[in-house]
Image (cartoon, rainbow, N blue to C red; front, side, top):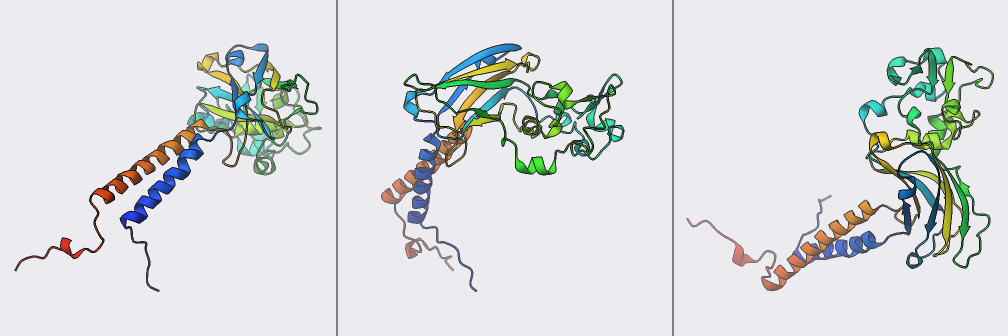
Length: 303
């Protein structure tokens, strides 16, 4: 078969650029309601209450309403950090004595007590405890049956293939010689879950940038515009040593995913460039048109 490729005449190119601009700019400008509270949990360790109000002009928050924690200046992408774990230990396929110390240094033991799971990622777990106290509608009535659900937040593939409790865990614990995850983070992890705790699994999927959000839970209820959400936060995760900050974010999803201002700005920039090029080529075509294959522009070498 003969090969085929489109003829890039001016009308075709102008149309494509203007179409890209028309599609990308509105997409970038579209946003979902997003509430960020940074001041109340920006630093320190203790207990605080956070009150958020859904903006009246942003519309209702449709379920699932996502609750994220957001960290600033925390580098999960540092190579030493990302490799500081033992994947076979996390799969529950190693006995405590078989864990390679080199994979987890410097957090493979505390004195003579071994850490399970070992490594920097597991032992810097975000351990703030966030609870939803109430949702009060714009009419002042409390919205019932709207708990903060903390299950189903991790990738199913991670739960099935990457994290398992050791066989016989309940009857073969290494008392006094091993510090387990539930002992390191008793407020977050219970003994039966261990490394299959979904908050832990979410944390172990490291972020690519130092400013990131991770899903803490979700609300399966429509939250009307003008409603007030009250959260209680037991702030255990200190950020002063990394000179960072933390925040609580409430948002929901739409057809293009969750709230991401960076992606929206990128759509606007690309759409603006495409629209600008389209208008530039259109002006050129109107002012100084040139017909494709016009013989007047052929040049022959004089012999």
